[in-house]
Image 1 (tube, rainbow, N blue to C red):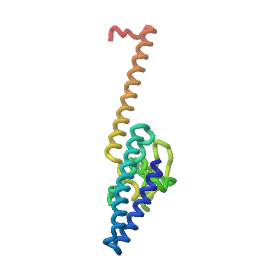
Image 2: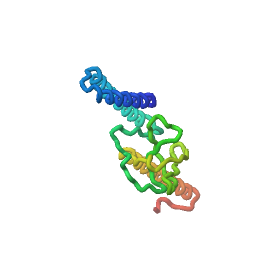
Image 3: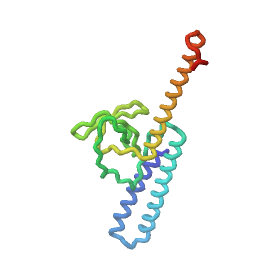
Length: 182
């Protein structure tokens, strides 16, 4: 459904640009002015609906947390970042040309010609894209990823502690260690 909304949003924006072009010739056309206002409202509502769907998906499914739909007012084309191997970013998937979605990716290699090899970690899918199409991770996504990494480290540490307790139990059981003395 979000894909349909994104396609509709592109259509509305195209229609708005056509209406605005017509308004250049007919500045006082009440019909065109009303159509312009209506299209702006539809664009605003559709954008809000897409954002709400993305937010809902992010809270409902972990897989979708790696998908990002940029706002229209985000002019990210001017961002200049010196990307390097190992950097996390948002990147378009070459097989998804119409949704406008960006997916979390890890840069594997940056070539001098402006191309880079990336890997989408959730799916294990490699791809090639232009460096100019890469975007930094939004703050909320970075924070979520850092929290997930900390949680995983805690899980591993807890598992190691548990395994040490089991080992000590077995050593005591076998008579090789006196836990009471520890």
